[in-house]
Length: 334
Length: 82
Image (tube, rainbow over the protein chains, first blue to last red):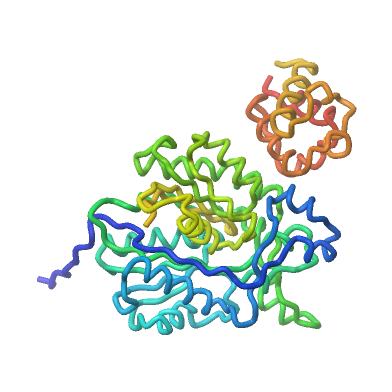
């Protein structure tokens, strides 16, 4: 008779134990970008709600911003880095393809030999990370997991592209996920639609870049209007489904933290979801721009620090972007 | 099936709700962008609301051809389920 393989037990419930974020030092107002795209401060504000954003300086690397945000999250969670069993990093702008930046981040934090790997789910990356982390804790493959969303999009954005130059920005946010007495992370609702792969993507593959006469950074490109339509209306349905699967309604919700893509998308989603007026809506995009995988933890952390949201509040996360890919879940804020 | 005037009037209500333009300014000869100041993102919202109200499908590729209120009314009229 073949030997039987043992299984391990995980935690019955999980929650976010702590959050932290890092905002790069350089504040970039619209006025600094308008000449290259023949635009104006007013045009940018009307189309996106963005007033200013942050771009990283040379020393503010993907690794550095991740480590800074993670130290704050670990301190908030009162978890020692050595207790981490896994570090998951969501990013599309770490320009060193291998090995995963997660390994360096984990080592600098003092978490080695925790498992460490990167995930590529663009703007939806952090919510994918939270979903994975929660499942790891629940299944027993980890007790404490660090999920990071980090981007340095200024490096891969074309400053002369009218569709993206004023949108993308830099930053990092992190969350420590672990076991809990009561449930703090609802079922993830996630998916992808590769038929819309062309809507948001890197312009050329690295192989095509090497075939150019003069190699140039393959910037991000985006078809704004179809993305706006998909995000504003289809993603409101995904957000609703996450509420349903967690067994709550908009009346139970305290905080709405959608991916900070564009204020117009946030407004359209809030209208479609019919959120009661008392629900706090994250509008970090105004001062932070669209930081892709970093936007949800940056925005949630900002609300916690400002006191607009408090520990124990029920929040709905929904994030969406290149792929097209998306993920949403209901969480209890730490 | 809705008449041309019913469609224009329904569309005018949608444009009013999305972009705050007085409904009586939304006439067939008016350009969404140049005359009514409806920007491309508001246009997307108008299109999605029009799809629901009139039971038509307006594909992304078609939206850029709808320059005037008359273009949109004509598209909806000819694509309504019989």
